Image 1: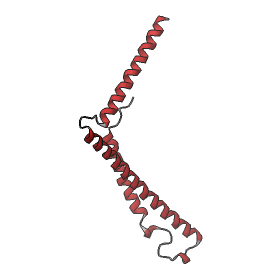
Image 2 (image 1 turned 135 degrees about the vertical axis):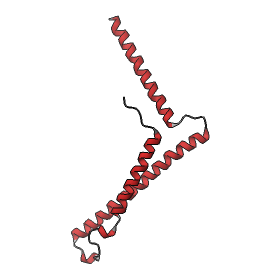
Image 3 (image 1 turned 180 degrees about the vertical axis):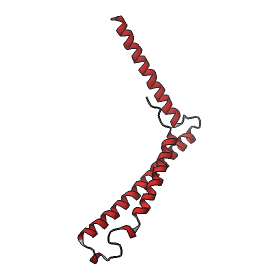
Image 4 (image 1 turned 90 degrees about the horizontal axis):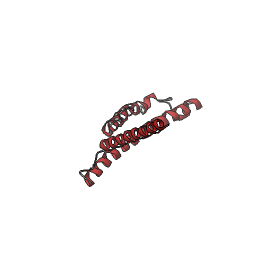
Length: 122
Protein backbone atom coordinates (compact mmCIF):
# COMPACT_ATOMS: atom_id res chain seq x y z
CA UNK A 1 0.00 0.00 0.00
CA UNK A 2 1.47 3.35 -1.00
CA UNK A 3 1.81 6.05 1.59
CA UNK A 4 -0.99 8.62 1.40
CA UNK A 5 0.06 12.09 0.34
CA UNK A 6 -0.20 14.90 2.85
CA UNK A 7 -2.96 17.45 2.44
CA UNK A 8 -0.33 20.17 2.29
CA UNK A 9 1.39 18.40 -0.63
CA UNK A 10 -1.91 17.98 -2.48
CA UNK A 11 -2.74 21.65 -1.98
CA UNK A 12 0.72 22.65 -3.23
CA UNK A 13 0.29 20.45 -6.30
CA UNK A 14 -3.04 22.16 -7.03
CA UNK A 15 -1.34 25.57 -6.73
CA UNK A 16 1.45 24.46 -9.07
CA UNK A 17 -1.08 23.17 -11.58
CA UNK A 18 -2.99 26.46 -11.44
CA UNK A 19 0.26 28.35 -12.09
CA UNK A 20 1.07 26.20 -15.13
CA UNK A 21 -2.46 26.56 -16.47
CA UNK A 22 -2.28 30.34 -15.97
CA UNK A 23 0.69 30.40 -18.34
CA UNK A 24 -1.33 28.38 -20.85
CA UNK A 25 -4.29 30.76 -20.45
CA UNK A 26 -2.05 33.77 -21.11
CA UNK A 27 -0.89 32.16 -24.36
CA UNK A 28 -4.42 31.15 -25.37
CA UNK A 29 -5.77 34.66 -24.67
CA UNK A 30 -3.24 36.30 -26.98
CA UNK A 31 -5.57 37.63 -29.68
CA UNK A 32 -2.68 37.99 -32.08
CA UNK A 33 -2.53 34.20 -32.20
CA UNK A 34 -6.23 33.69 -32.91
CA UNK A 35 -7.30 32.76 -36.43
CA UNK A 36 -8.27 35.80 -38.48
CA UNK A 37 -6.30 38.27 -36.38
CA UNK A 38 -6.27 41.69 -38.01
CA UNK A 39 -9.28 40.95 -40.20
CA UNK A 40 -12.82 42.17 -39.74
CA UNK A 41 -15.51 39.55 -39.32
CA UNK A 42 -16.70 40.22 -42.87
CA UNK A 43 -13.23 39.47 -44.23
CA UNK A 44 -13.10 36.03 -42.62
CA UNK A 45 -14.44 32.89 -44.24
CA UNK A 46 -16.68 30.48 -42.35
CA UNK A 47 -13.77 28.17 -41.37
CA UNK A 48 -11.71 31.06 -39.94
CA UNK A 49 -14.68 32.40 -37.97
CA UNK A 50 -15.32 28.92 -36.56
CA UNK A 51 -11.65 28.42 -35.67
CA UNK A 52 -11.58 31.84 -34.00
CA UNK A 53 -14.70 30.96 -32.02
CA UNK A 54 -13.12 27.74 -30.74
CA UNK A 55 -9.88 29.54 -29.86
CA UNK A 56 -11.94 31.92 -27.71
CA UNK A 57 -13.86 29.04 -26.14
CA UNK A 58 -10.66 27.20 -25.33
CA UNK A 59 -9.15 30.29 -23.69
CA UNK A 60 -12.35 30.81 -21.69
CA UNK A 61 -12.38 27.18 -20.54
CA UNK A 62 -8.75 27.37 -19.43
CA UNK A 63 -9.41 30.55 -17.44
CA UNK A 64 -12.43 28.89 -15.81
CA UNK A 65 -10.30 25.88 -14.91
CA UNK A 66 -7.67 28.15 -13.31
CA UNK A 67 -10.39 29.97 -11.37
CA UNK A 68 -11.87 26.69 -10.13
CA UNK A 69 -8.45 25.43 -9.05
CA UNK A 70 -7.86 28.62 -7.07
CA UNK A 71 -11.31 28.26 -5.47
CA UNK A 72 -10.52 24.66 -4.53
CA UNK A 73 -7.21 25.66 -2.96
CA UNK A 74 -8.92 28.48 -1.04
CA UNK A 75 -11.62 26.13 0.23
CA UNK A 76 -9.04 23.57 1.36
CA UNK A 77 -7.01 26.22 3.17
CA UNK A 78 -10.07 27.86 4.73
CA UNK A 79 -11.46 24.51 5.86
CA UNK A 80 -8.23 23.65 7.64
CA UNK A 81 -8.09 27.09 9.31
CA UNK A 82 -11.77 26.99 10.33
CA UNK A 83 -11.43 23.53 11.84
CA UNK A 84 -8.33 24.52 13.79
CA UNK A 85 -9.90 27.81 14.92
CA UNK A 86 -12.98 25.97 16.19
CA UNK A 87 -10.88 23.38 17.98
CA UNK A 88 -7.17 24.20 18.25
CA UNK A 89 -6.42 20.69 19.48
CA UNK A 90 -8.19 19.09 16.50
CA UNK A 91 -6.20 16.68 14.41
CA UNK A 92 -4.90 17.95 11.10
CA UNK A 93 -6.03 16.43 7.81
CA UNK A 94 -2.74 14.53 7.67
CA UNK A 95 -3.26 13.15 11.18
CA UNK A 96 -6.81 12.08 10.35
CA UNK A 97 -5.65 10.39 7.16
CA UNK A 98 -2.86 8.60 9.00
CA UNK A 99 -5.33 7.41 11.65
CA UNK A 100 -7.63 6.05 8.94
CA UNK A 101 -4.76 4.23 7.24
CA UNK A 102 -3.60 2.78 10.55
CA UNK A 103 -7.13 1.61 11.37
CA UNK A 104 -7.48 -0.02 7.94
CA UNK A 105 -4.15 -1.81 8.43
CA UNK A 106 -5.26 -3.06 11.87
CA UNK A 107 -8.59 -4.24 10.45
CA UNK A 108 -6.82 -6.07 7.62
CA UNK A 109 -4.40 -7.72 10.03
CA UNK A 110 -7.31 -8.85 12.21
CA UNK A 111 -9.16 -10.32 9.23
CA UNK A 112 -6.03 -12.19 8.16
CA UNK A 113 -5.53 -13.49 11.71
CA UNK A 114 -9.14 -14.74 11.84
CA UNK A 115 -8.85 -16.40 8.43
CA UNK A 116 -5.61 -18.12 9.43
CA UNK A 117 -7.16 -19.33 12.70
CA UNK A 118 -10.17 -20.67 10.82
CA UNK A 119 -7.92 -22.49 8.34
CA UNK A 120 -5.88 -23.99 11.20
CA UNK A 121 -9.04 -25.53 12.71
CA UNK A 122 -9.81 -27.43 9.51
